[in-house]
Image (cartoon, rainbow, N blue to C red; front, side):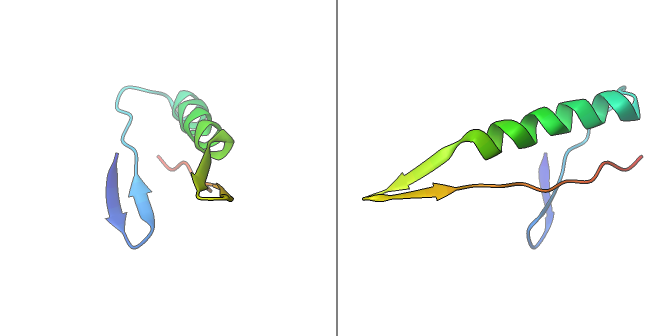
Length: 54
């Protein structure tokens, strides 16, 4: 995974089919979204959007 620009990141998954790459990326997205960041008395909810391209 690397930063591609601005708020874009690239995840390279060599050797995986597009379907398997999508499943892996979706697991990462859901795990990140489930996390919660706390700062003092506030909770910050995170989200990630994604697109799989071949």
